[in-house]
Amino acid sequence: MSSFKIIGTIQIQPLVGAPLAEHSHPSEILQKAGLEAVQEAQNLVQAGFDAVILQNYGDSPYFSSQVPLETVSCMAIIAAAVREAIQAILGIEVLGNDPKSALAIASVTGCDFIVAHLKSIEGSVPLSEPGWAELLRERERLHSPVNLLTEIHSVPMLSQMFKQLSWADGVILDAHLWQGPEESAKIKVPLYLKLEDDETLASFLRIKPKVQGVILGSILRKKNEKAMGTPAVLDTKRMKEIVRELKGIQRKIKTPKRKEKAKGKAKGKVRKK
Image (cartoon, rainbow, N blue to C red; front, side, top):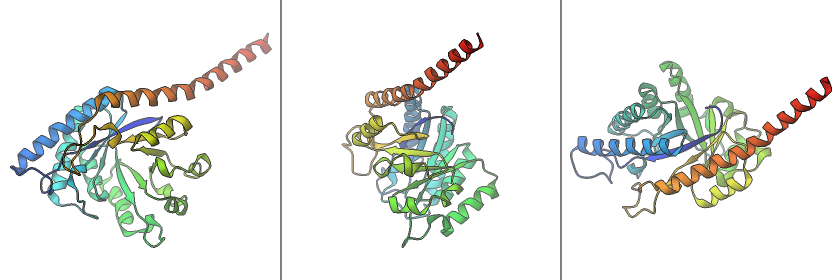
């Protein structure tokens, strides 16, 4: 993904088999969740978002690794429907952390990237874990063009992984963990910041860090009045306000460069005379 991207997360309602799913026919559960996901995707794109992530947020409590087959089936059908409905960049995230299933879903539905969560164990290097070895080989086996974005959850993990991150196509970092331009400069792949609350958004707007994009999730939604773990409704007004603020700072960052170029051309013309 080139240039600065504003990425919105679609928190899909509980899918078939999830504890919080409605007690109705599986096809009805899927249809309801799918229709809502398509509508949210269209709303995000109309509001100015450049990319969308589909996330099985409502399936908590999450599996620690591989999810059931019914979850993969539901995610694939919903992803295909959303892919048909929007032209924006589309990603898949299978919670708790099943990047292999996410890769399969994204590859067959024409999605552009997946999100995988890296977790270090006893200080080990996450990219040397068997799951990552399998994931990178699986992408080659499928001849898949899908990009792999890796989400990091701690500063110590980040400091261990500067060289190993070259295997990834991008890194997602929680805005609370952002250590400044010197540390982020060590990451040689595109960096995306995750903004989950008003505090991190305000900090981002103030600091204006040079990153490839931002990912917005719960901050886009109204206060949840549903059961805990169930996605809340998108706050369309707040969503549009955030997009205007983010696009505004990007214009301010780019404007001085254009002026400098214009001054340089003017000086060149004077010298020629």
